Length: 151
Image (cartoon, rainbow, N blue to C red; front, side, top):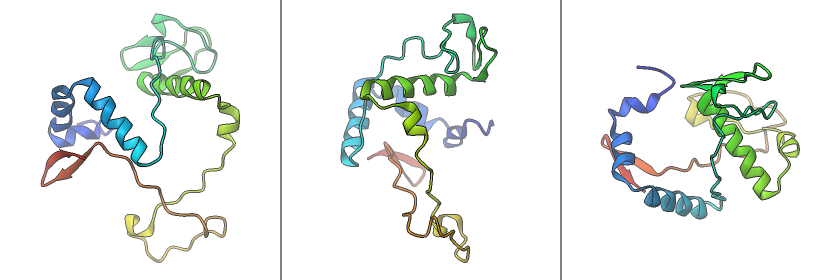
């Protein structure tokens, strides 16, 4: 079992749920959960996102070979799915009119809650003292007694 795909630990339950749902229902559920938490759900055309290099912008079908991405123009390499998700994120930011360079300057100051890590005695840095814990993660399914139940 690959650590890159921990969802397999659930015995394919997640895959069966996805297979049995229509894509329209999945999108509707994602939009509903995002609205519930005040988040934006934006549909982005994924065309060429798995073939485009996020470093130099070069698009070529041969850049992607199954799960590996290697730009034949600049030599950048990465996991193909991660590379495609970066490109989808960039398209979304452009659609919303958000500059990627400004977004990357936002400092990441979130630390896990002590009760989640099991470390109650750890000292907090002065910078993080006033910061809240991690925000609640959105989920489409809840696991109850080993079964996935839609939220």
